[in-house]
Length: 200
Ligand SMILES: [Fe+2]
Image (cartoon, rainbow, N blue to C red; front, side, top):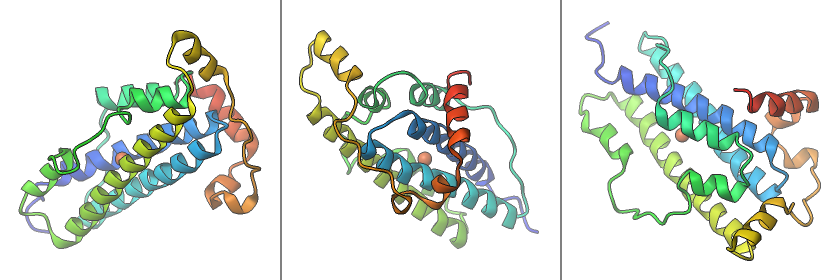
């Protein structure tokens, strides 16, 4: 093996951050009854889990393993929001998806490619990852707009009513509408996850 790649820390941070996001988004899915929210979160949570495994796999191919690090403040706050008793709309707002973003402005992902030593295989993985992350953010922003349009009044009373209101007619859950992973997950495990979510 040649010199140690300079981007191992980046791969390590992405692998762990993505796995944590997969876990708290999966918990959030189990806490909502809104099928529109479940559908978007399922897409994003599945991507996060796959990113975690893909980056762990790439580290392994380069000859390295995961170096466990503590979650940073952003990860802790995001997990707390996702697992909180807030409404889905309040969670999305707290996570910043209610704000319009300038898609031409630089973001944190642009920094990844300042390292010109990145090998082509890792570069391809990073490129796909970055574009999926930005697409996930767009989907969550769109979900925020959908939920905000459904919420009638912005008064404190209206806000409280919106929080209590369940979706009018949740679509029936069918086996085909669920991912293999979700179908395989026993209902009991889901209930347990919900009860432990607030304790974590
Ligand atoms: Fe992510």
